[in-house]
Length: 284
Image (cartoon, rainbow, N blue to C red):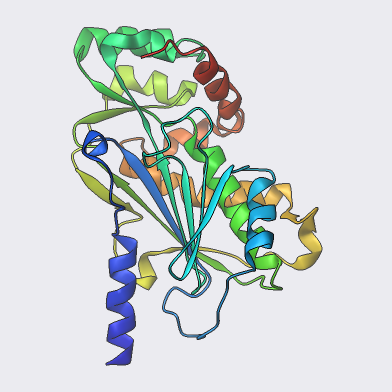
């Protein structure tokens, strides 16, 4: 019976969605759940003290700028340049050791193709969308790979501060994406559109990988203390985590697994273009 309670609790955590304002009701979000103890079997408290939490979360690779406590944990957010009352890029850390991270996904109406200006393959993509699905909701997924690796690295840094180097269990949950079309700036995906057509997401929300039990979670292996540099896991560990967390997300959102693998070299550098595009994006 205790085991069933733990499994039910985990299923609820994996599918949880944060409360948002009415203006954000239909906004797409990517949520990541990370834990070293998803069934809460250790009965261990995993929270660092608050100054340590702030220090780690202010640092690279994902510097946050807004910090406060909550019942049973802490919250860090990236608020610079954003409406602070909204569900911005948010990290919630719980005393059980779980991390729940929300990333808003840029959703662009295909009629505003200039929002993609600066990506290497934007012209070809917007021409095809304009011809076949001119009013498409386009999801800009060019942050997902890099942020998946960075989030895992920062979570590992929080754990390493407490001497914990255990494997990490991960699950992604994407919501409000029904009938949207993904965009990722790699040639293998853009070239595939001519043969396969545009993906149109058939689910309102989706777990990636599918399933809401422990066996369905991605397991990221232990990273030994010797492989940490300046408090963060080494580059190979970061890339490994990024691949294993992001590939199920791409798959769930219509980008078949062969395409990111074929475009792996481009994928490693797509964040640089995404940041440049965001800086040059016209105001709404």
